Length: 263
Image 1 (cartoon, rainbow, N blue to C red):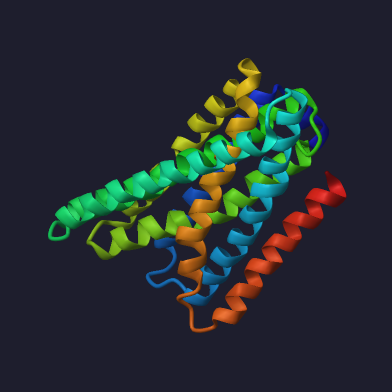
Image 2: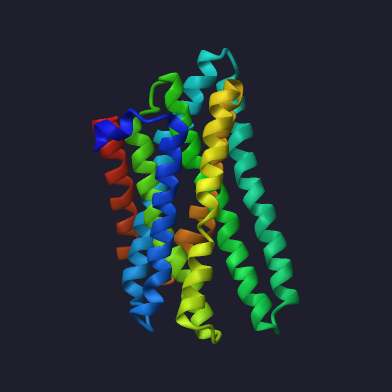
């Protein structure tokens, strides 16, 4: 299976990987069919674990290859990493501000509130899908740190994080009075942008090589913003904060070991 996958075109690899991340979103959204109430400890532990995986992926799979690529292209590595990284964070910052403003205007309207919830998760899924696409597209250049293993692990890490995201959309919609079928539909719909963004990310880095280090750093910045702004704070609402922090450490360690040992 791995041999078959490794021989595919890089864009096709990115498409398959992001279809996987989307499918995990759908599985998370499908929780509404099985449970009316979700165990908070389990969800917070998964969020903490996913945060750790994404932090490690942001460095080992994105920032480190971005710096290496900038060196190979005779660019200023620190400047490239900074510009890409900060722009990735700023994009999501602006998106969050727009979302917060619209949410205040819609705080008395359940339908608008639900739509803004879907929009918020969808907005975050765009750079996540692009991050996977960039990771697979960068394999075309054989740079150090950019490996099939690291790209697959990045997709798995984002997929893990997508499970609670799908649930985070579908369960509130269920509470707002949507049927389980409609709640599931809108929950999985928030992740459908990832395959599209994944293909775009892979094509950009393959066709325009000079953009690669910027896009890698951009994806890293977007991922770190999501981790710091959403995943860690949400996991720390749990009464067992120290245990949730430990899950973050475990997630980071696992990703680090796999990336170094198998990369």
